[in-house]
Figure (cartoon, rainbow, N blue to C red):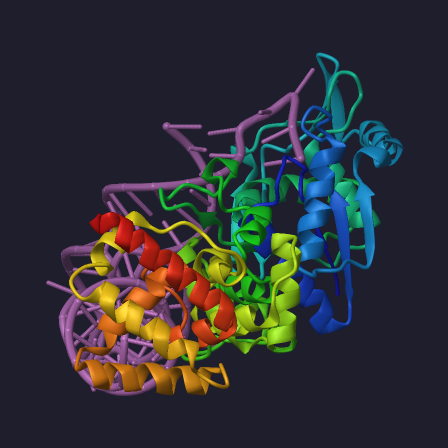
Length: 421
RNA sequence: GGGGGCGUGGUCUAGAGGUUAGGACGCCGGCCUUUCAAGCCGGAGAUCGGGGGUUCGAGUCCCCUCGCCCCUGCCA
């Protein structure tokens, strides 16, 4: 099996393209075949080196490696011109106002045998003679694709649904050139929440945006695999090996799917929690560009859904930050300040200062004061984290350490005192 | 306009004539409980786009219809 991913470099790779690449890659890896990367850059205005680099970058991040390429379609122009010449000489194409058009017979039909949709019939009467080369001689999309797929000995063309209508044209070119076409499979398109085909206009849905938002490539692969494909009625999580083994075109659905970031977040959280702390720390440090204490990472892990969640949730374990005024106002009232002062005394004597002993200390204090747990815990939480949401309070306090915890509590007590005065 | 594709809860899907239409995300409630999550338990939500047929029986087969999307470019 020889498959290819042939994006046109129009900017960041969006998830629709990423899914097409993934499916092709799964097919190649599952069959022991080859995955060819070809950049469709014959439109010079849109194809910039930066855009090409973005695609390569996205594929690398997704860990979808290719066996051949990247080939530049533009660089194959001599071969395309040769094919155009051949078509004109054989009478399959003719010149019209300087451009070259393929002669489409009025009679007959071209049948596309699609692995996902079955046979699709196109009556030739509905297809006009179409242009295969501009008047300056440069080859156009349908010609270049047909020639390249033949030359690169592609056996299965797996691409988006939006190419179905172009398929009979490409088939005609291949046959006019004397070649048997490969097999085809057209994937349902990915739509935005507005129901339209996904494009750059739906901004956030690019691979680079997902990376920046803190998603894991393995989670993205799993999620993307399920957008348009299903294995059975219950399995949701697949290792990449399982995807390679189980993926098949026969089970690809026919209807368009809508990208749902909430579900991706959920799935990403599940993958995140499976990571060992060291690995999670490495990934966080790479994303945030700074070193992080292992303990802070361990404490935050169970509450993160994306890597980007770490800082807002647990950044206070790394550096002090300002109080959230709403949180302060809500918690630092009634007996809160007094409870906080008592907690300070108790923690000052806690030995050793670990999670277990911090918990014992604070729970004992709750008993002594005869208040509800949160009357003691929340003021501490606000004092050390600045807000009402944080990882577990005992772990947080222990991770922060005695001196830093006491310093922050003291600062909060001073502020509370100033408030009253 | 012409051609093509698609239509199962808000979303992703299972279903290849006989199931109380299954699962997942999200949502609601409960448990847990130190906040928020996670986890566990439970719940609401689909007359399978609509209408006709065929059949003892249709989401599954046939016809019609509606809706959405794609192509229709000297873009890809």
